[in-house]
Image (cartoon, rainbow, N blue to C red; front, top):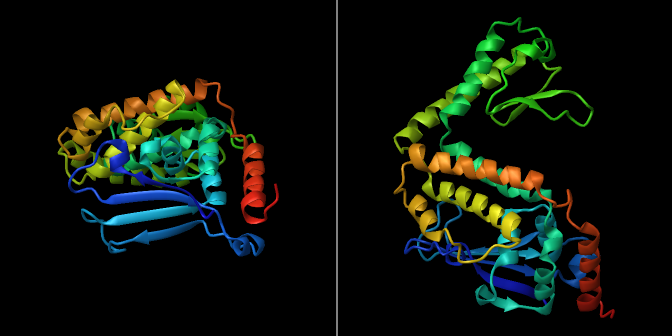
Length: 314
């Protein structure tokens, strides 16, 4: 057995396919005896018909096959691609071995607070294409306070004057117990000089301020990426609330509206996305999920699978 699973992936799986959609396949393979013994296990084998330097065109095929070891790593990290694959229904499977069926039966052992990775993906996407005024206001308020201070002072020496509002305030201490302050996802230790913080906040305002203005006019927005961000947030919520993701997604029609750019980014999409991300973050934090996945189980699973299918040990 080499191919553990191969499945239809992407828009056809989610229920958001259009005539412009490319064709995606994902899979997992068992590394060869030589790759395992020589410590040369590849992470992924990729096949694509499109141009490496251009976006895929309608009908282009992408196929990514992950080694069992790498796939388990991705799933333990809560990566979006692995979670998608784990919840793909049997009618999306082209090839499915007993090994894959066993992985799916135990997929809850991957669930942990590392599902925040799903949310991090959504935040990265939305941050590229627009930002709400409340974030800009938080950054501008902080900058105004900092500019009134001696730039040689440490952040700690202005601690009581730093604003506390949506998108800015005290963060958890770092591993060494040093206090930290965050603004719009950027975190600073209390020991850093104010003069080092100011240019970072200024750059944020300049860059994202321009993006926010473009977003207000629905310009310079990669609607496909934004729809992926919303999808990631919705899927994370499904796992936390229902313990699974059901495909095609219930929100497929809404995601298609976003993907096609039919909704106003600033008035409809950005507020909805930010609300969804805030809700999911609360759900993960308050959930009974463990901090870490059951890594011991999955390490043993890899060993048992390799012993059985590569070395004939029963």
